[in-house]
Image (cartoon, rainbow, N blue to C red; front, side, top):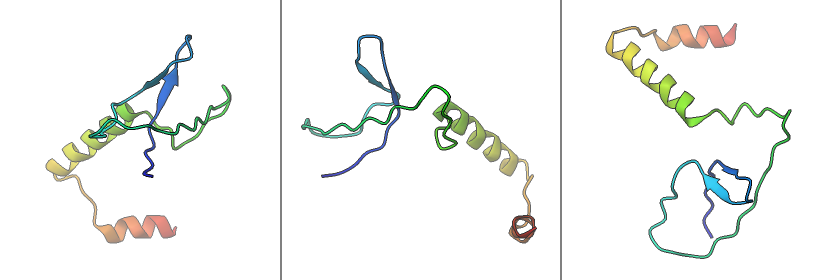
Amino acid sequence: MKAFEVMGKVNEKGELLLDEPLEINTPSRVKVILLVSDENEFDPDDTPVVEIKASLRRALEEVKEGKTRPISELWKRIDD
C-alpha cells in the first residue's frame, strides 16, 4: 500500500474536496484517514500551496537577478 499526503476540505455536505487532483494512474480502492484541525489550531507545516509557490517564484527571481549569498554566510547565521 502506498501513502499520499494531500490537503483538502470537507464541505457542508460532508464531501471531501482535495486541493489538487491525485496522480494515480489506475482506479483503485483507498483507505482514508482524516486529520481534522481545531479552529484555533495552527500547524506551521500547513502553509497554503499558493503561498509556497509565490515564495519559490520570488526566490527564483532573486537568483536570476544575482541576489544570492555565499553558503558560508548562511551557515554562519544559522550557527548564531
